[in-house]
Length: 84
Image: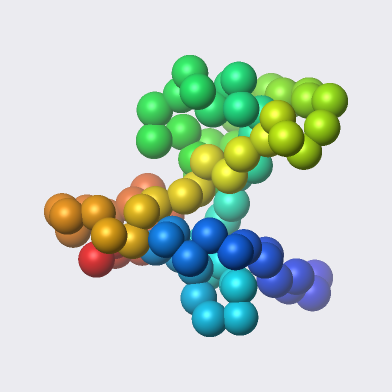
């Protein structure tokens, strides 16, 4: 299966790299209403256990994988990436 790059312009995210590429090992895009009710631990690693979250437009969706690259504490994300 050919890898397709995920494009992202949010350069304040830990996973953002030059050329507007996302370097997370997995990405969860879901509805805003669902994401608002979930902790940060609900991310791409549990996506196969989640039900569908239909929306009416792209304005009602969000990337649940976002991690602020300027966060103070270094922690391991559930995907194994070290957040600096």
